[in-house]
Length: 326
Image (tube, rainbow, N blue to C red; front, side, top):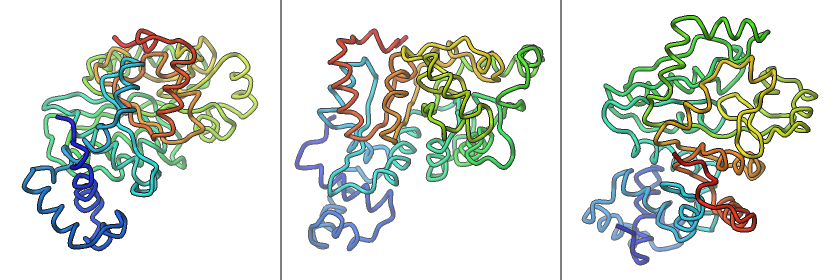
């Protein structure tokens, strides 16, 4: 049921108090209302039954812009993190919202695919602990060198730990030194089975990477800045689970992708609930490509990003089928 406009402040107060652990006076200061009002709102929240993470996250989905974006692109659900005076810093708010949404989407016995990167790592870092034994968390792509932060195995292991779930890591490098070696490793029974079962996941969590010179693929040494620049000239627009996609969200037939140990992109698209989280304004073009390629059914973005997406989608005359939704 949509949140009524006069209940918005109650949801905001409950979100800040219960999810962010702020004191009542801090919530009052944040919302610029009296502490007595906060106490009343929190009492009302308990009476309404909205003090849980699940219900409080409705605050970010009950938005006209979210509905318009869902309708335009053909997404199942959109959550929008506001950028107004009553919102937390989006950089801090985004992972908290995404973690709450993620928990809502998990069902008993689910198999969950997890990618990597700063966004996913921050979501894992703020995720509440839950007892979801029977759930399995699997790594969508190969691993990076030990010194690199936000590694795929770190993200998978931490999310599995937070959920009290089984974690399955993919014990292979993200990028091999040759195409022949990558092909041979994919043929190994253990690796082949792990990659083949990606399509059996019910939920996937990831972000989309950019192709700038300081992108994760460049920082981790998978590609040099010059190679990444050349890939941009050849039509690369973004990165999904370590693999380059073009402006239409399609897999690029290039040496990097052929050497990459990662889930087949068709397998990722086959996952029913594909949760894509994007925070940075600089990721607009990669996000647009990911949406065109059908890599999202559930989306978490800032309000400004949502408006840019809606404007572009309407300007280009794209229809719902352009998202590639299964």
